[in-house]
Image 1 (tube, helix red, strand yellow):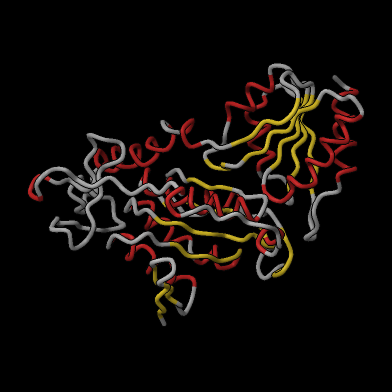
Image 2: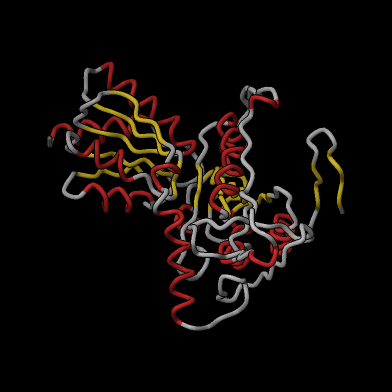
Length: 338
């Protein structure tokens, strides 16, 4: 079933299941549309094979995952941040992905636009990794005038059709011709050469996969979105993302009222993981307090980057936001050992 949405210049298509929805999104994008789909945890699991197809075919698209308690059916209407590593590693094979984590309805709106822009820029699926608390939250959202919204479109080829290489390696991100524009485009999930045709040779596979990875890795600093709040040279730093930020900012403000030397690193781009601000903060921070609504996923990234710095973990399961008092206790513990 489809329905035109003239007010936004688009079309809404209702599919029979999650497997079909991402397939349709990939096809729509290859035909020139800006396309997205949305789901929650179990549906996200069903989309993994097609996410791999979008990565391999370098198809710009957006996938919203509203995280809920799991595994399996879990807690359908309660918040979680349990799909963070799945967003990074859920599809098989080697690749890089972009994932944004909003902490408010306003950010949900803004990051969805940003997701489309990043997707079109890097020819990669982008995940908006929200959680149930943000998705069901009611807050004011400011929608700017259309002419003030930055919209990025994919780079189109400038060569004649007979010279076009849809997966050419002269550039990390090849220009993308869409179906029906007069260019020959072969689309396959198999390892393919620069013309898009299957080629199982080791050299072709290695060259293709390294380019798919490096187009994100080499542009990571352009992709990272984060905010550092508080002391310029803190002795302790809170690390948080998504709706857990609301608890963390309250604990941070209380810590500052107590005169504690603390900063807050709000991660907005979960993948690629923003290593630089963490490294900068580790120059003075004796420890980090990682706040997550899971058993420790971004915690592992912080431990990897922070080196010898002390890392404390505040875990929240069951669908509720973390208790700010628990975060404050961890801040004091880090500073007591500084």
